[in-house]
Image (cartoon, rainbow over the protein chains, first blue to last red):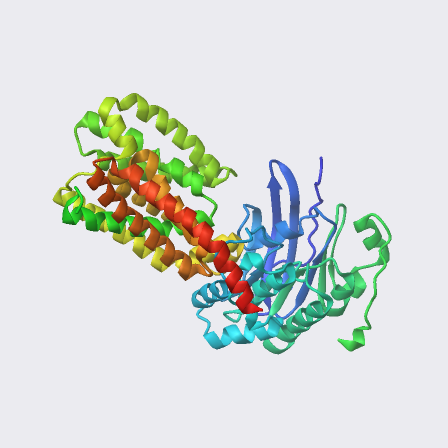
Length: 251
Length: 265
């Protein structure tokens, strides 16, 4: 049976309590009868940063889309009451000349999230995106600029949870540093909870408080230093993985 | 001024305004050909209405609304794209409509036959146009987010399925109002050509909506006038005027973009 994963309970599952923002119980997603996720359970503590890692096709994006209700699924997904989600999807397929300016997108999101014009300025500053991009069509932005714009849009409305699907893909190195630092500040200072998909294991070790590893055969959930062994990573990606592990004391 | 009468002119302008505004979103959602196909769904409704001796526009509106709900339902129950579902529904509708409607009635249904509107037709058309314009105004932000990403829309608290249903219903209403002027075959043009002209010129969403609405209204007004003056069919002339504006816009647009680039440097 292709792509079938055993149903492993990764954490004790219970309804989202005051300390938990999300509880996922026995989550299964299948496309055309083929399981992509099966029997996945985990909980996310408020203010934590959960990195979702795994090889291509392991169901990372499917997981994020299932927990926001964008995909039909089995199992239970419980969000804490009052959760406000900011979401940055994986690279979008937009026509280059779609006549929506960056300012239009931010204004639309700001109005729906009841955010003030000042909040738009703050969100832009946090992502390092200059105001000169505001009049440009969103399809004309570079990949990195567009990712920052989506991040700025996600920040409007003071989200309590940020779901980020390869946020820094296409962003230059200084931009990546800036976005990662901004996320860390949001988590530490504003108490935001982060669920992020990343292929950059250095970033995972540096910023994530927990890691959820989706592999073909095994799953792991825990503190990155303990959960991510070299053996598991080699098994997950099919070959030995070299990565830089930051000193935990710096966090 | 035209053979439509004063109320007919105002109704046709309301229809054009609704088509120009909603058509902008049709274009941005990459549904231009699907919108054109959707207008064909009116044909069996017109056929049934003629058989039952009720107003053909009533039959057209009923068929379009039923088509919109059917398209939305099939779309939600399968993983097919909207335009694919519309393609299937419109083909069946056209086949049934062609069987039910014959002769001159078919020609009128296909190409439109503007005439003096009855009081209830005027009221219904105004109400429908008002609903469409209100929908665009109220749902503009939701539609923008849904165009960029349905997942971002979902996490922004938008019921994307409900939004899609309302969008298809307003699209049906827009087509229903315009059938009298442009007919089943040409109504889709007013949802496509003015937004296409606007897209060439617009720098942002508000410009897109304004230019598209202006082009649709200008085409409808001048097309109706030209048709009355020349004694030709109204629908084709409206479309030709709109297409002429589109071609001029493409010529002006490239120069405009070059000038804007030069100013930014």
